[in-house]
Image 1: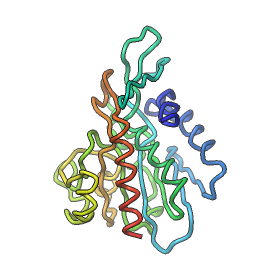
Image 2 (image 1 turned 60 degrees about the vertical axis):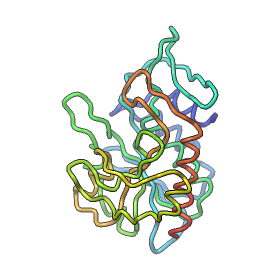
Image 3 (image 1 turned 90 degrees about the vertical axis):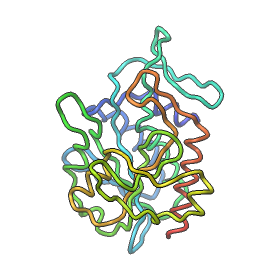
Length: 241
């Protein structure tokens, strides 16, 4: 839980992701990985050697305006407050996804990771700007992408905004779905949806990772559900390798 509270304390408003990127890179210094960045600021990480890699994605930015915030833990619930003890967003969308990525890079021997900037819509600027600008060649030897950027605790989004098919409904087996309490559903827009819209021809999905009230001051996380998401993704990665 300490790692998650560290992530929540870092402001990463869209377009101002430098602090969160520095924290992530410092956290990964001792790992045998290669890290690339592109002109817009996306991070692309590779660990291990394989003909085809599993890939996990998340976005680096959050919607909330920067402020001094403290993280509060009440049992299984985690949220943030400002210096006046008023509730503020903690950036669980999508620091929960970043937490999962950091954990997977510690445990999985072979993995690719895509971390996108500027996923959130910002005023008149459309969202998914990092995914829209990235070079798709990073995914040439990737067999699928799982993004952890969905509210709640039970969704695997297989059909994105506009009815775009992200993966088949049997992409993840029923025994794994049932063990961790997930089901295939329709959902909204995020980076992997943008990649599919650009023509990326591999299965992708977006998975619930335990946060609620995204984009609101009342945003919070159920830590047990976030851990369940990590176990779910880890189980699928290992079953598909």
